[in-house]
Image 1 (spheres, one colour):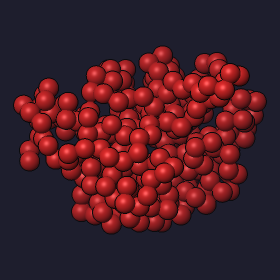
Image 2 (cartoon, helix red, strand yellow):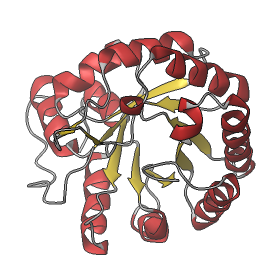
Image 3 (cartoon, helix red, strand yellow):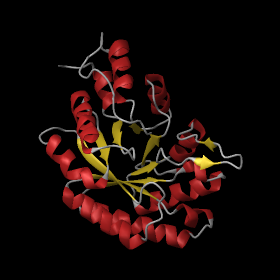
Length: 255
């Protein structure tokens, strides 16, 4: 089915997220089918399921991505590099790595730079691309985000990314708060990153209007679980009607 060029453009901004902790192999296979039917940019799948995604998406132009040090970023540098090498050998061509958030907060920039450099070199050695996840909800001041943008720009990282989608902060009253990809953060990340570094929004981009709004801010990728809702709305608005490729999104939601 030939799609309107705007719908295709928007589809190719979406990394379909298959990372919820409760997802089974069957859930992830269904998610790959959604990604294939809607011809999105990629799936972002759990590391152990990379071979499954590679086999299901063979001969398509839907890419296979995965996460490293996810979601808390606490693995050692060597472990993150090992994870990256294994993921790429298994067939992943996009790597979304979570920084060591504690090291960012204590401003141990030497460590942070060493970590990102090591994973970036491993990723690029496999001709894959690297997206560095800041988890902005954990960073109380813009100075941390600006410094991360500068480091990522200097090291030749391919994308800077707002969030994991799972960075829920427990308050003193026991409640959880989560913002995800805010417009203020996206503006900052676009302004403080080199032109060649792209920006990925993850966490809370769940409607077509959300996607169009972040696109206008300079975002070129989003992480989404609401892929069907977003692209069916795009088909209605730009393509002359629903594509009706898939009836429902029945897998667990995440970011």
